[in-house]
Image 1 (tube, rainbow over the protein chains, first blue to last red):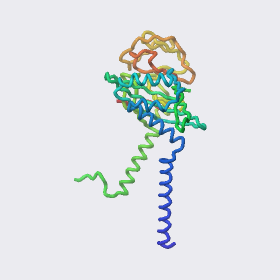
Image 2 (image 1 turned 90 degrees about the horizontal axis):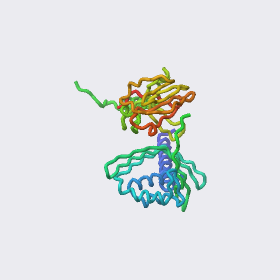
Image 3 (image 1 turned 120 degrees about the horizontal axis):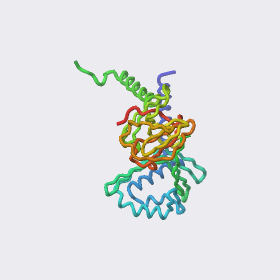
Image 4 (image 1 turned 90 degrees about the vertical axis):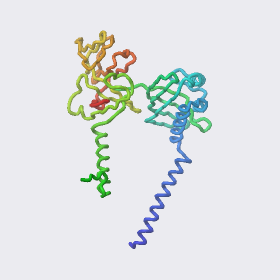
Length: 154
Length: 163
């Protein structure tokens, strides 16, 4: 094979790789799949509560929301509104996210660590495994159930 | 004499760096792993926020001993890792009377404790193929502690260092 021919093949190969890379990038940025959308929703909700923006945060929940702490949509909102001023900083780390999607419903399992500093100077921290049940409403994924998972050692 | 930190031969530098990275990955995967402790249950032995090194091959060479500090994880994902001390073996009867540990009705000394506390529990039997583990913070009430019975497959290794 001539040197010129080799160069041309290499050029086309490089172009192909660039096109593939750009297409994948466009797909992830502009047309994320449902899994990616759920991850983005979770990280958006976390950043909103960390910024203490409870009005934006509560929009990620459905009106029939229930959780393992006996909260409803209304009591959760009141709980947040009544306590947000006594909190100086909230830091939430979420890891090991696993998502199972079934049509317009999904189950999300994750591990979360919470660090809370109050205006009184007290520190609270806690961690746990949680299951979120979410469903698609108005093209957005919203939480309708939150449960804490137990620990098994079998 | 001049010491060269960065060798002029970049090929050798790349090979050396790659070898170190591969070695670290192998050590992390098979031999030693590190964690950051979270919580007060192992105070005063392991402090909240301490770095804990885990020997992952410890129990390939010897059996678990009473008093070993082990790192174990949940059976299912998402995994949660815990650090506790092994207090009792399968089939043993465990009881705390006024902070003193009794195994099969015999008092067990716990030299690693600074404060015994005053725990009082009903006697219970450790399940077959399971170990009873517990934190060192005996000032913390019994009910605030998480003291599960864990099987060998949950155990990642023994703690070899913490600070």
